[in-house]
Length: 400
Image (cartoon, rainbow, N blue to C red):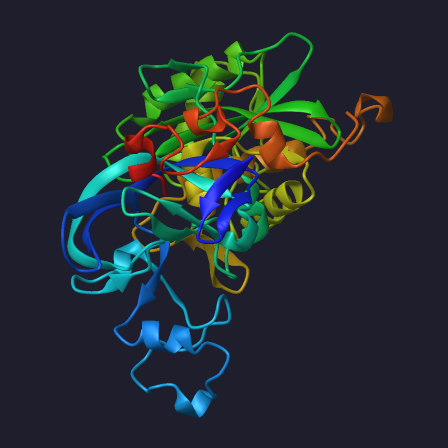
C-alpha cells in the first residue's frame, strides 16, 4: 500500500482508528484565495512554518547555525528546519506546511469527539491529506516517554469496530463468547454521577502467552447495585468468566452484592485483610500495571478498543511508579484492563499451569491481528491512496 507524501507516494502499514477530541482548522493556501478546512484530532501534528522559512529552505545545508535568523524556527532534526506542532496548540495567523504551498490558519473551531483515522508507519513519516494537501505526521498519538506503555507499542494498536453492542451502546462486543475458551474480566467501579466511568474489560485466553480483548462495558451514570448485576451478567455470558473487582470505595459494595446477593461465582478475592474483592494500593496497582505493560510489549495481549487505546496513550507516570491519566482525562478503561491482567496471574485461573501445546504459534504484530478479520476503512480498498486518487474528499479532509 502507498500513500501520497511530499516526496511522492510512500509505503505505509495501514490505518489506526480512534475516538478523539477534534478541531476544525480553517486556512487559506498561500494566505489568499479560497477558504478551506480540515478536521483532525487535537493531538494531530503538523509542521509550523514562519515567514522566513522559504528563504532558509532554499539555502538548506549551506547556512551555518550562526547565519540562521534568530526569529526563525529552530532546527529540529526531522527534516531540515522544522517544528512540529499539535493542532490544539495552533494559533490564528500561524502558517502550516502544505505540499504545494503553505497554509495560513484563519480560524480554529472545536467540533467535539469524532472517530479519526491515522496512517501508520508511513515511510518518511509524512503524508498529505485534506483539500489543501496539508503535511501531517503519522503516529499522531504516540505516548510520551512517561507513559506506562512505550510509544512504539501504542503506535501499533489499531482500533476495530464492534461486531455488536449490548446494554444499549454501553458495551462494545468485539467477539462473542466462543465454546472452548476461558475468559477473565477486570472491573473498575465509579460513583455513577456522570464523572468517571464504571468499566468491565473482558479478555479471552487463547493460550498461555496470548490474550485478546473481546469486550468493554463503559458507562458513567450507572449506580453500584445496577453495575453489579451487569458484571454478573457479563461473566455468565462469557461462560462464567473469572474476574477481579477493585474494592476501594464504592467498589466494595459491588463486590459484596456480587457475592452475597447475586451469588456470582467468578469473583477472585485477593484482599490481604480478608475482604471481598481486591484492594487497590500502591503495591497491587504497580504489580497490575507492570503486568499490563509486559503483556502488551511482549505481544501477549492484543488491545483493539478505541477508548482503551486512547486512554493508554495518556496514562502517564505522575510520580515514581505511580501512573494516572493526564489531567482532565479518564483512565477507567486502563484500570479495568490492568485488573483483568492481574486476574490472569491468580492461581484460580491457572494460566501458568496450561499445557505448552496450548500456546498458539507466534508473536505476530498487534496491528496485523487488529485488522485480520475486522471491517477496514474504505481507504484500504485500493493500492495507492491520497487526494486525487478517486477516494471521497470527505475522507481525506478528515484524515487525522
